[in-house]
Image (cartoon, rainbow, N blue to C red; front, side, top):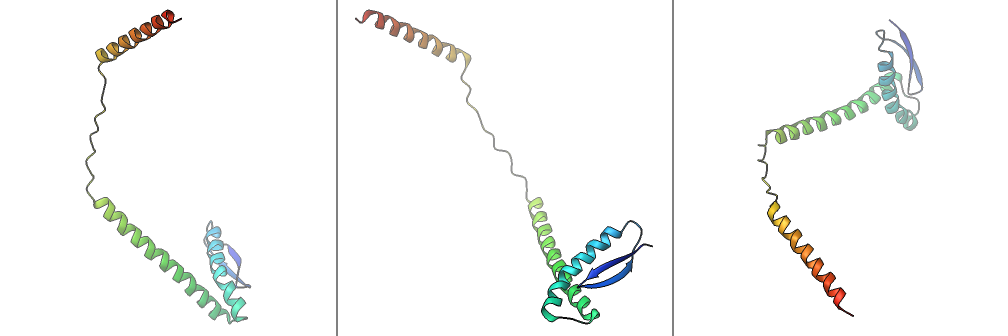
Length: 123
């Protein structure tokens, strides 16, 4: 088992962990240290057990808040998933028949031809 030296609240601790879990232990120690630093800054030198207890409680409080939020989100997700899926709305897209398009094109061509003839006739 590897032994690691970690710092929490400015104090050094030697702890053991399973091989390959060193980074998890360092991460957990860093989280605990983040909670311990303000305690040490506010209260000065605390007994080791008191500092660790207070930092652990503060961290546990944050974890409880995250668990509560997670529970609420899971409940909301379950409610959303339980809703019936609305039927898709059928949208009809108007299609201009080919015959109408051809007729309109023919009318446009005739109108352009008439306009050209009128321009030729005007002095």
